[in-house]
Length: 38
Image (tube, rainbow, N blue to C red; front, side, top):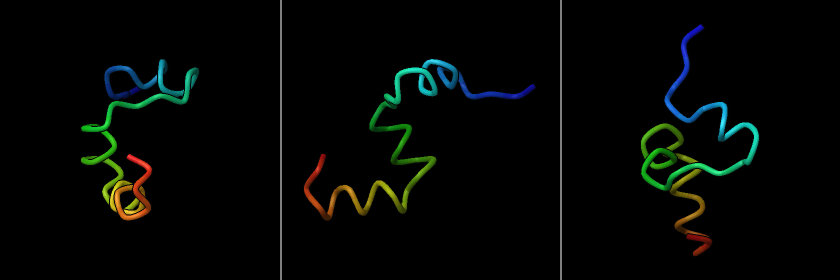
């Protein structure tokens, strides 16, 4: 099994670091930035 450090914690809590979201989910991150949600 391969996982990114903190992946299980993210699954349980729903929380991800902003930097991780920016790198791994760049499209979603841009949408959040445009909607001024972060």
